[in-house]
Image (tube, rainbow, N blue to C red; front, side, top):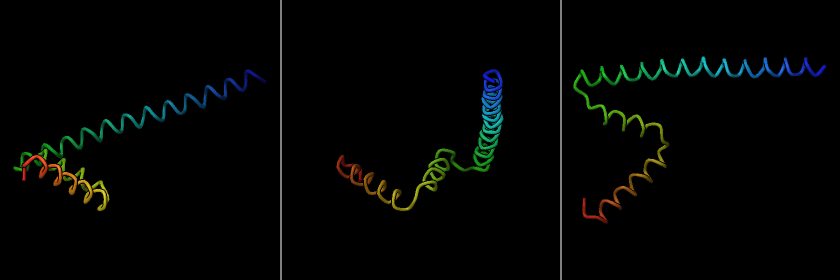
Length: 82
């Protein structure tokens, strides 16, 4: 009976590993696709770093974004940047 358990456990582990590997491959493909879109945008005259910043900002909820903007403004004022 112990051998059956070990075989079943090994099969389950292998299944998890294979699923993770497939997802990692998909992730790599998506990363390449995203890179291509940034290259297209750059080719159309848009600034990549600014687009990346906007994408990052859009991921955050409004309250978090407002809080970060307020802190950034306060820090910039503190060191005479504004």
